[in-house]
Amino acid sequence: MTESPWNRLKITHTLRRRRTRGGEDELEWGKENCIQIKRIQEVAELFEDLKNRVSQFNMHISETSPSDYTSTHTQKFIVQVAIAGAFYPNCFLQGTVDEELASKELYGNDPRTTVVVCNLPPFAFLYYKQLQSLFRHCGQVKSISFDSSRAYVEFYRSSMRGSGVLPEVSLSLLLTQQRLPLHLNV
Image (cartoon, rainbow, N blue to C red; front, side, top):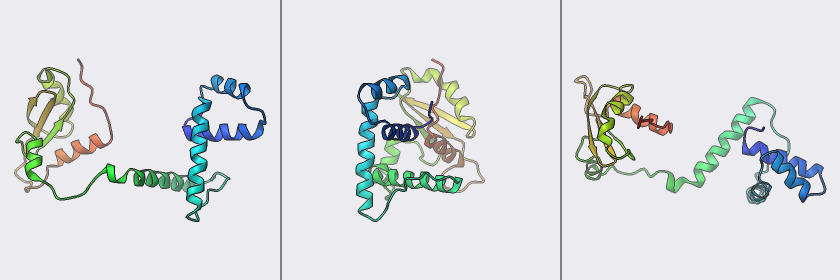
């Protein structure tokens, strides 16, 4: 089994070049290899369309795949940048921080010491100890307060730190950016 949709598209494209007849043979091959041929055809059309659009900017895709690690890594990076660019306006907006809105969102808690956990199951207060143990990896938890499906985890402010955001809060946010799900035993 291939490891990525990109490789599946390449294999399908190669097999299509080798085979002149399509139809039932191709559909049967797709079923045997758990590949939806219609979806692959749509992706192939999209790929060709994007290739034509990009060629208008004097950028061409080589037919030979890169053999060394650096080229592969560079290609993956370019794809990531292109995807980020495609979603740029909806991805993030950098602007001034509205402290009133932040305070309202945090239910009056200090944004420099508090992390919000959303989409908790009903009766979230029953998971107090589990939440405390989950955030213990980030730092010493001062308190956890609940508001319907949200929990507000507040960390202790050490006297050595200035008035900035606590490292515990930064670490918690970094962990959420990695999209690691928080598992609660229900």
